[in-house]
Length: 91
Image 1 (cartoon, one colour):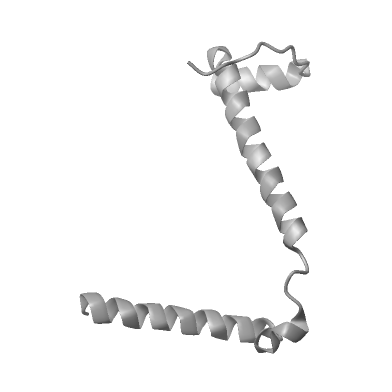
Image 2 (cartoon, helix red, strand yellow):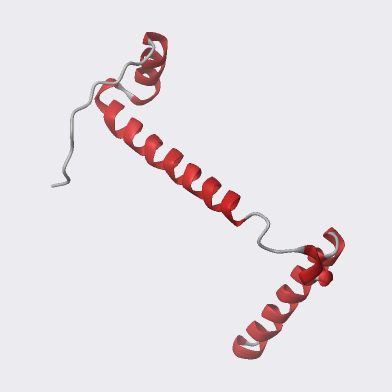
């Protein structure tokens, strides 16, 4: 069984009433735990993206000078992948 700890958290009464209306009083903990896990994942991803910002310098990747260049690169990748798929599986 997963270790848990009871912790008092203050919620605005209106928010609890709305929560109960949508998920039911017996499902509060499960809903809050899942929502917290999702939000923590989002925050971790945001932090990772922020820490990676600036890693690629424009001068190091002249082939990606603008959105059109990036779109063209993605299109070529997809075409190559589709060609490999056809080679392997046919059609």
